[in-house]
Amino acid sequence: MKAYHETVTSPCILVIEDDLDIANVLKMDLTDAGYEVEHADSAMNGLIKAREDHPALILLDLGLPDFDGGDVVQRLRKNSAVPIIVLTARDTVDEKVRLLGLGADDYLIKPFHPDELLARVKVQLRQRTTESLSMGELTLDPQKRLVTYKAEELRLSPKEFDILALLIRQPGRVYSRQEIGQEIWQGRLPEGSNVVDVHMANLRAKLRDLDGYGLLRTVRGVGYALRG
Image (tube, rainbow, N blue to C red; front, side, top):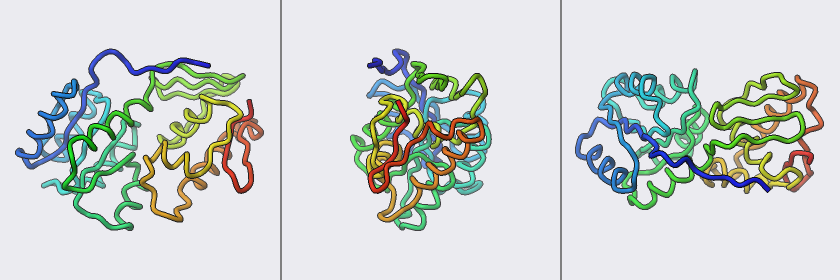
């Protein structure tokens, strides 16, 4: 079995938050935990810093002065797979579904405990391991966020990539929908959501386009696996 590890260098976290008091508290908590921290006080400044500084993770407030944080998520997802944790006071199912659909990786409802924030940051960064993974002609490079099958690039969304990275670590193991939801969305999917099934269907279709249809196995009533 492969050994997986986090990078030794301190990851840089970009905090996009217009409230300076909250931003300073976040910066202090993250710095004390060993992270480097950059701060942007608006959506536009945040997008600029994300493009120039290449942070390992973004903490994003929704209530920004220039435009909504959801728009920031959409713009980032056009050319970046950086993990995004949204900080919001909007605690409704519709809002949670909207954020996940836009491409957010996780969200925290204000007010939250610093320990919970740090735990979620660690989970997101852990999923971005730097070690290449392979199974037969299928290869996944987490650092470049690149997947190839039979030497052809497989273009995946950020969540499709994360799901494939989870499955390829233990080929043959069947992961339930609940396990996938817990690992990829930290169990934050609303009850009864079909988000996992939608992502799996998209992943299967993209594999099929490269003659890899048989790679992904569905166990009816149980879950999904890669054929080892």
